[in-house]
Length: 218
Image (cartoon, rainbow, N blue to C red; front, side):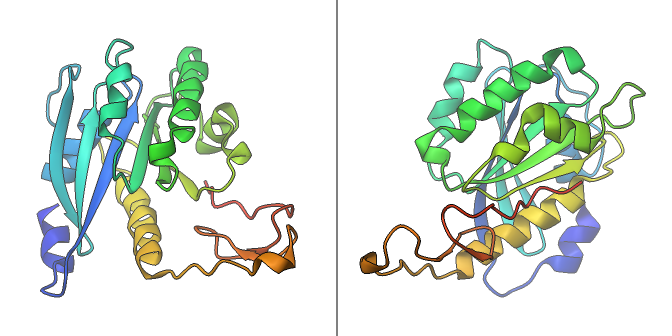
């Protein structure tokens, strides 16, 4: 990670972003956090509470909040939602028995008013395991194609090797930079409900009833 910091660090206005990283227990959140922070694997134990670290990438300083994923901890997630600009949801792609539980938790997060403007990055983690679902299968299981009014992206990852992590951060950093520079103009009310809108996060001109151009890729 030090090489990335040296390459992309600039004296011109480093951007500060608040990122929330959540997911079920044992999905690999803490391993991902410290792989990004230190560039190495750190032996972890189940997170009780949270870990918070600054990760610098491409002139953006991400404040990463890694919240514990046990079911007794999840009700506490809501206390960390305020001012979140990016949501990283980590999924254990090899755990098909709990993918439904992961979908339910993700839907809960997406319905939170405080997270309504957060860009969504899904890490389909543990791709090194033989039983892992690929990113397309995880997309279907989580119902990502049903997401509306939010930009999202799914990235296949392996936390232990680092594969896919920086590709995911590339998308997230670019998305958040675009939002910083975007000016949203509301259409005149006399145009009615079929007025064309510039939809935040998608960059395509469309009517409210038109099929949405999805940002999820694999």
